[in-house]
Image 1 (cartoon, helix red, strand yellow):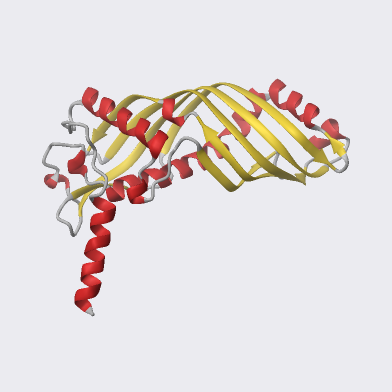
Image 2 (spheres, one colour):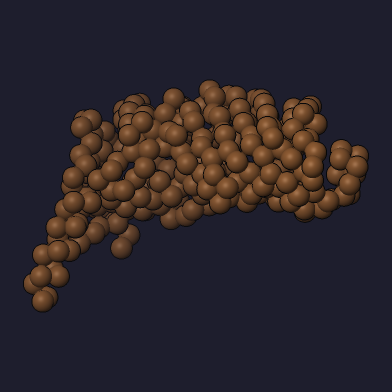
Length: 258
């Protein structure tokens, strides 16, 4: 029985760690231009195709489901289902890896991202009185949000570990990295946003588009936090299953932490 379990484990390990092979030449970790070019190609491939061999879905479109965001203090927007498009066209502006400091510091630029989804909105706030004539709302509808010229800089703690297969892997040490972001423009559109018996799509659309800078400054971080968590689920899956030797040609054993 032990032998059978061992054989099954070995087969599964091979299917998940060796079935996918990066076909680009590996880089020196000190060659920033090469690292940027390599990860740009990998990022584009992930965007279009994902990596089925390690159960990593495509980034573009990225599916959303059951995500809640609180705005205006007590108003909860619950995204039942939706998609984000545009990730495959994003560019890596810079990508520095400092293993002495255990940090990876990439900067990502996306010309346009669009979010479409079906959402539920519910809650109460005195701020609603001037908008809807009531302090509480409950309704649902569809939305499209266009984000223009997004720049995100990440500071991600990483280490090098050695697994039982004898290979080294990058290990991302957090789901909540330090980050900065800048969004040059937000365009919002609501459809069939029915609250009570009234379709308030036009009112909400006009309000958000007139006040998007204020809303982004106030609630943007919570929204970006949610996005970072989703993206880092993909990052963890990638690094947990693809050995560092596939894309870094330097000997990383001096940096092993485990």
